[in-house]
Image (cartoon, rainbow, N blue to C red):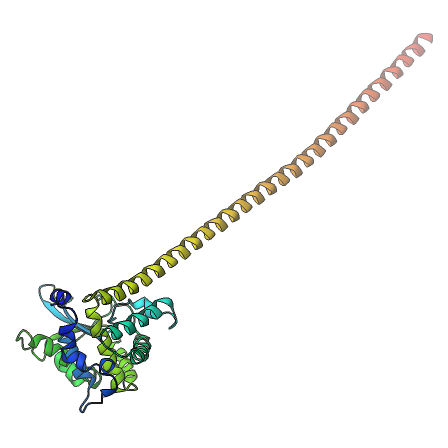
Length: 327
């Protein structure tokens, strides 16, 4: 379907109910609807391959590699940005570029510029808010919570978001009826807390804001269908690449500075060690010289005493010999 849309342009989307129910495109004519629910919205957009608040998919069973399991990623990051892009400040370069992309995309689809500008800002604000407590999708071996379809339907928070309804609807596309005890694995042992956080934040939003949240994410699927849309998409990716280049340059500079500092420290340490060794050698040499001098002086004194003592003794013997001869 996506490949055919590339050639068909935006018209198939503009003729769809998704476009006709997107408040940003409808403009001032949009009004609230009866019996609005987030669950119905999640299910409806999932059937159009747009999973917003969570992601349902099939994977090999962690408990039994011979079978499949139904997984629910409660930390799914929808849209064109990555998880890390939402962890910075709201006025960061990448989020500012993302807001511009969504504003211009809405205008290209037919929205009023002033409405597109306000709604695009609210959309990015809302997306960052909903991802506040989100984490990177954890490894299944360490962070899984096995449950089943019946338990999900019995949980008010999960049904409010439409998790079990979406699972049932997606498998219904292929006429597969799931059993109530069908194994379902939640990617996150604290999934209930995550779901409660999402529901509590969404409950403070208006229907218009929630519909726009889904509407912007759905429209991003059509980012390559016209030359203008492709240009907007490329501008967004260019901004991301520029940010990556800046980060790489900063990292390189930091690494170089660290290496230089380490080298300087090593050189200083080596110089200090050499100086200390030289000082020690000089001190030792001075002490050795002093000891040698003292030894030499002692030897000289000893020799003088020996010489003087030996000469005196010989003279006495000669005098005693002459005295004996005279007698």
